[in-house]
Image 1 (cartoon, one colour):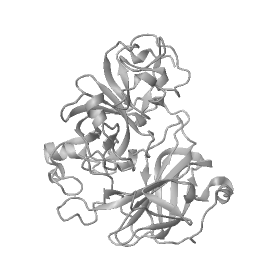
Image 2 (cartoon, one colour):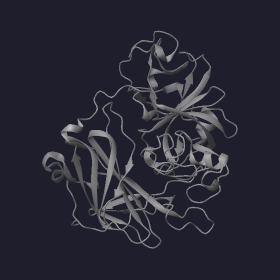
Image 3 (spheres, helix red, strand yellow):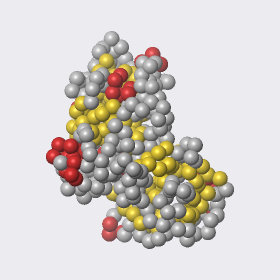
Image 4 (spheres, one colour):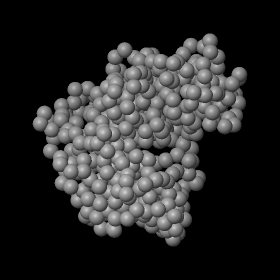
Length: 429
């Protein structure tokens, strides 16, 4: 079941800055790159439009998402849905490392609407931290505390419409607070770690023709997943946040996170309790819906007060569910949250993979050995991030234990060391 994404409520983000269009030249001229006015016109939007220096919701493209749990629920007790859109801004390189970014939004937010600034940082290994929703600090400002120091930050605006009027953003001023010398610099020596892996209950999303939280229109036999937090929501057609999902039948799938759900929208359950946005008292790796369904946690309800009817912690698009994993019904699966580790990943390109792609499924078939004659043991979605372990014989790459893809499907893998055995521990790269 899919609930979509709701934007977190930010009280009265009232304009304190002059409404002015910021040109790329002006943005580049900010001294020391510590403070800057974001170039809204250069942002990549989904469900929004930019014109005359202002960002507004595009009702023709915006998707319905649940409002924050603090607002009144719909007449049937479910979340009150509202049009939601995103504007992802260009990354910003800083002269000094930071772990905190302050934001001030200029514009108007009528009653019931909201504007939230999410911020993330580039990690030393080249990946991104999760998106951190800014916390309001005043009537006009908010701040995002990043999980680690960085010299590259990126922001996105999340606009949620109100009952009778839409929010309008005319400017975004941001300030990266320098890290004190005693606090060190970005962790260039970040120790290599495996990504987090948990067993959770999976449901089939379906909803062909609907729109995901990042603006993707769901197609027949589509390939993506939904997790119940926008902290790990990839922008449309990107895969900064991808998962590996394995079923009990031995088949595995790699797919990007393009939607938010099931049940909740603030449940990054893969994170430890001191980081988790909600329900930090639950064990790490336990979705709130699972605890509500199996033990009556939170009165057996989700964040919107709805009775939880299954313990799902992930939704799977039809192509992942049927074609890649071979599932016939909802089931417990093992999920690896690939962005949480420091394992090197590269993106799948189904067009480059030529004959290795199932035309209907739209994913590259994973083989149990480096040969087209080997059994199919899963699939990797176009654009999904996969870990490249080593180079096997005859133009194949190993991506896991007894999991191989044609090298043509991963054109960005670069030079990878030869496999020295049959398992992933044999990597030499």
